[in-house]
Length: 160
Image (cartoon, rainbow, N blue to C red; front, side, top):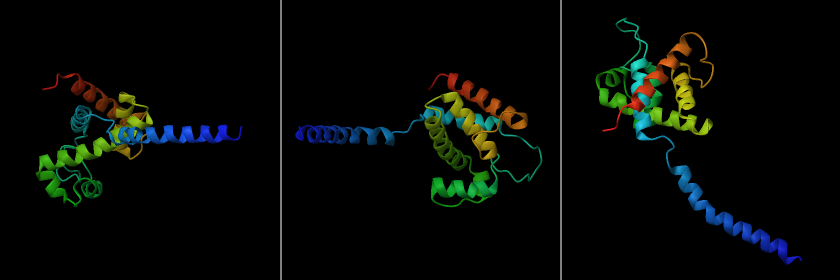
């Protein structure tokens, strides 16, 4: 009888070790697709509040704050961009925004158990406020709804 618990323990360990490579591979695969990232990036661009003030302190079509830009560019490009570099190079701006959007959508897809629209809502709230929750009334709620609407429009377009 003393051998049975050991055999069971060894069998469990062997089965578990056999599953580890497939679990590690599943964790490495991004949850969010390129199409989802592209749709979210475009939705954020379309929903960006326009102050209509020159030199309002926000940069690019996504209306990013300079202090936010520094961290994002370090994370995504491994170098810090100036607001002027970000503002004057739409391709670099889109690259940085896409990188951060991918990260945040992945975080939200994990948190919402792959609920795409809840993930978009959470990421849009975070984009505006720095928090995934609390955008259920006022200006932030309107902004999040706008992002969701633009996102759904982008996702419904045929892919080319």
